[in-house]
Length: 624
Image (spheres, rainbow, N blue to C red):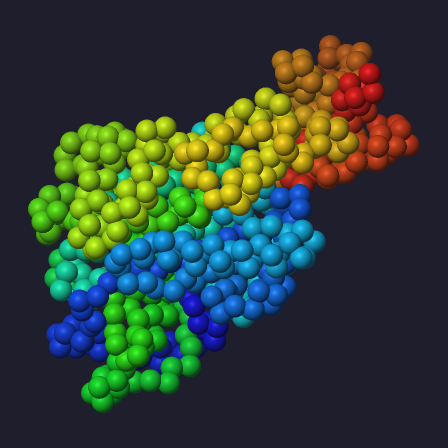
């Protein structure tokens, strides 16, 4: 949804006007296909780089607008959250050293952002699919970029949902959340690659882009962590779909497919089917002030912008999105690859793009009319499996079960090489970029596998919070040197800024928590304490909110033989005057409060959720 002047459709008049322009655009697009009015004989590649901004402690920074102003370059624009920015790279003709040109422009622009960010309290730029140091408290309304289009999108989707958004992702760990804005979408940062295609082969090219999406994603995955949980290898896929899902049982039955989707079938007769299917399935939710009548312009020889069609297309998020554009009165089509994550390094991103473009260009003839070879459901299932298991995925390819690493090395890398040679890319560039992909496969080292391996290693030495910081810091250092992830070593804590000093609660608190309901029997409380060797038990109400705490000391001498005590509940004995602090609180402050109030524990709360507990025993371990 690129237009800044969008507004929610709130009246029947606005809806009718939008649909009128939308249908005119569809008719104009169809006429352009019939009259062969699209640019041919030239292909271009381009990309959009989404990035994360962090402070000197590698936590999200909300300085996007200040950094944007300092850089003052039209290639940069805002994103949904104030801790993100986007760089729009120029399109380069697909030939010779175009990927080197793409890389050099990206390096130059990122260096500008790095310099501007550093001038603002030592801010930094990190390229990652999902920033490891993001927390729930960062995903609040004040973190949203204060532009009307983002507010409009948030309001429209929330109004249509009629309820808070629900997030449930099952991976190695489980994440279940409710949230009240679309800001969880802002956790996702991608490197969106664009490839211009000819109208003559657009059907086969788009279908092929769908078929190869799973294998491509498997070797590019870089987003295994969200809010400290280890989930999918490319968690962005599940997160993005759920974070902007407006389906609601009480809403129009028309919205049966999420607005973020892989698609539902092969296209067979015209690329127009992609747009007409989307219009059929998804009601318009925003509009704008349309100045053109696309059919009238077409009759005058002016290529229309198809503003309504592009706006509707911009409220839908296909992982492979067909895009229409006009430049110097010449219309073109391109495929936008939206599933490639940001990072792990610039070289990795350029290699990913070259690999994808090469495979697109090298499509074997037998994969034309692909519906005769691969069921669409297999392609979609391959994509979802790749998102879950990355380079360890086992694919169903043309009826044969093949491991991802074998499929990439034996089938897709040779196809990519042929496709890049066909596109007249320099051999040296082909060898280098495909070599980065091959080394990832040989070493079994994608961004996702590097993050998971190092998270597990660091968890043995650091708190969860410091682990997230150490991962982000190490990513940043490798990215600044532009080292491909296959050459990254393990995180070296001896070169980290992280202090081993136990000065804050998160560094010593217990995060493996057991809680009881206020209506649970006291006997159950005591048994849970004994079973798990804990001395304090937080108590929650039916809304899962902390309402008290019970210490083992309170239960000393508690006589369960008395009839009244057998039925006594946690609510009757819990301490409701408990101390609650944030993870960043200094331990000295917690100690003073515990001494002052004569308490033996502190509950650690973040974003209204219990995340840890700090006890007198923890304090003694520091002081001893």
